[in-house]
Amino acid sequence: MNEKKTIKLEDVAKAAGVSKTTVSRVLNHRGYLSDKTIKKVHEAMDMLNYRPNVVARQLFKQRTKLVALVFPTVNDPFFAELEGELEKRFDALGYRVLMGNSQNNPVKEQRYLHLLLDHQVDGLIVGSHNQGIAEYEKANRPIVSIERYVGRKIPVVSSDNYQGGLLAVQRLLDDGCQHIIHTNYPVNLVSPNELRRQAYEDLMHKHNRPAITYDVSFDVSDEEKERVFRKMFREHPEVDGIFADNDTNASLIIRVGKEFNRHVPDDLKVVGYDGASITRMLSPELTTIRQPIPEMANTAVDLLLKLIEGEEAKSTTLPVKLISSVTG
Image (cartoon, rainbow, N blue to C red; front, side, top):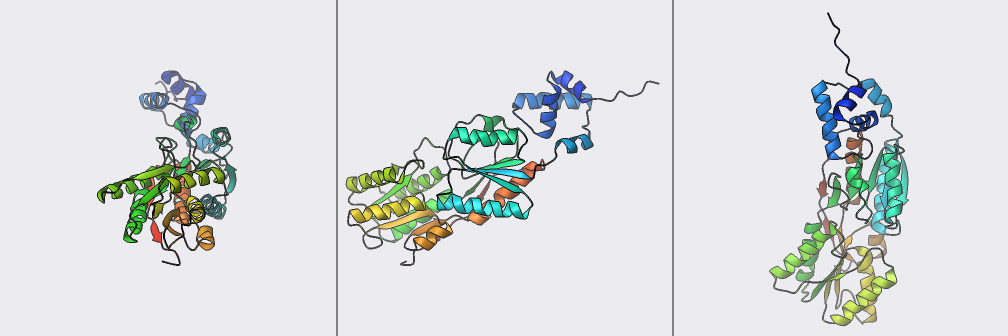
């Protein structure tokens, strides 16, 4: 009686028409892989009734206990607090954290992505603004994004940007503002921030008011942003309410407004977005939409750990809250 043949990795590779390395990457979710390749390997495994060697897979999947965080800068209060919360949570779980500030340079971001793909880190959390990095679509590795869209299969942790936009604009309307302007990222940057713009436009149209948005890139200097805001005050001297897409811009707008003899809250109302602790301490006069930064960090860590363990992780949206200034 013939003994049953043991199906090996090379048998799967031959049946799928790929290399043994490719089969290993599919089994262990490593490296650049197309959906077509993954499907071929799984079909070959099913056809051959192949069962991976669990012990060998565990050896292959030894952890580095190192994760990487890639954000634009720590000079922004929101990102600084977010990175701090992430590092604190990972440290409590025994992970070391490699922090990379990309300054929105796609080359820098790709370097950190390659650390992940080369197995030097167990996972990656990103919040940078770069777009068009093709490796994200092919990575097939543990990656979580915060407030950014970087790949179709990468889960996103975000605040409820649309609800935040509604809260901000409604507050300005309730304060009696008749001419409300919004600032936001350029429309070519695909980001959850666009939901803040959409909420602003929807509510303005509902009240039969013009929706006017000034595009302000995150990457430009404060001086360049101030030039945009001066233009806004010159072109619309009637403005009495501004919904800024982040607290940094809101603070700059308040400063520029004083050059035009416009003062908060007397003849100008401003609502920001983010609500980082340092901003609320240094700018208590600013009304803002508070993102739940600690909860966002904890959720991102939980999702990344699920992915590292081979489990499914889904995008999550967390609630926001309007925080009034100390002057009301």
